[in-house]
Length: 234
Image (cartoon, rainbow, N blue to C red; front, side):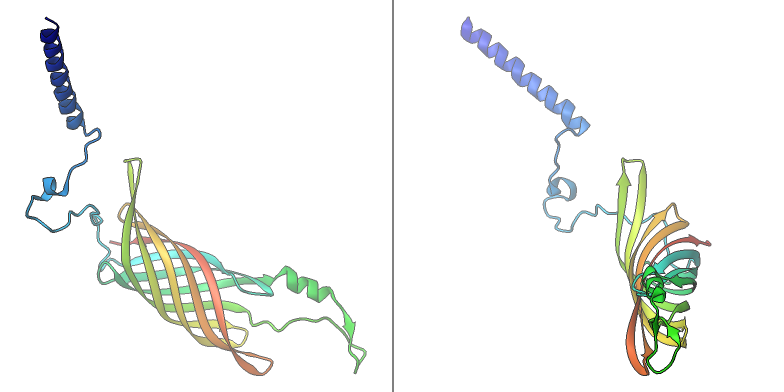
């Protein structure tokens, strides 16, 4: 009698486990599929889990605005804004033209130096130790963009944001107190796409050119950081 009861309970327990397993596996709780369950025993190609964007960038003209600042100006606060236009010929190679202007003001360090006064030894003139400054008034940039790194962010299964990590390189004409100077430039940035027409970007750029200081030529790195927004026309 006791053994028969135990047997019946064991049968019921096994049936309950099988039913529960069927229910939970149907809902996907704790279920981890093996690669062979998806692509078969003899398939060796990987399973693609990161799908491409549902829209393309190739041959879609793009215009945008940008704003930021030059971050390594010692004696000035230099803010920048401008417009840019770009065109990709495929999903990872494109070209961009950017035109920026600046608003330049004296930094706190320069204001403090201008408050110092001294009299020249060889004259009665009173002057301040004002440093030599070559201000940046604007720049025109033509760059080639490489964007081979692609990803997307899924926000609580309700919003997908696509992104590109890119590098860029090209040439610039930098308008300074010493005139327009030829510059080599490089940049790195990341873009985030909303829907299929709007994108936002964060970019760090270095413009490298030669300038005169006390009658000698020096290499200058003008680093800028900017935020931008773009719109695909088509």
